[in-house]
Length: 123
View 1: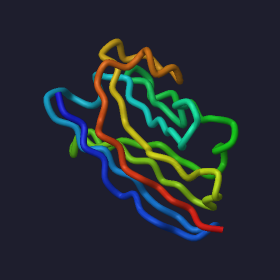
View 2: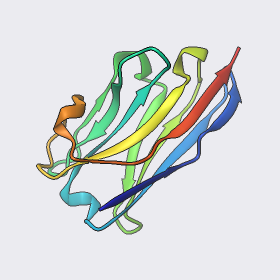
View 3: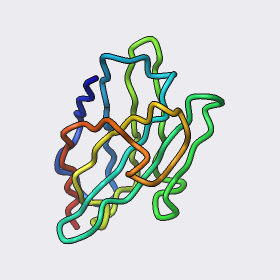
View 4: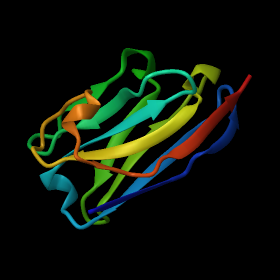
């Protein structure tokens, strides 16, 4: 099982980025999958996740209306479209997979993790 993130970078406040998470070793739509972030000195938090069963989604309150999670099952890739970025969105963003397929914002629910990609939003 492997998850590889890409798409991070430096962007000005108000800008946009799209993160990608390419997965291998399992079928994306059979797993619950999510995006987490960790800023320096802070705990990791669940940003958004999507269940395997019905595609239901979860968003952290602070990103609702700005971030959109999606997946392309044919490409076995998860995305996080981020718009109207704020300096407080600066963090390392990681994708994670839950074989149980559930939707959960708790990192302990996820067995497989990518290495992370840095997102930096300048003011």
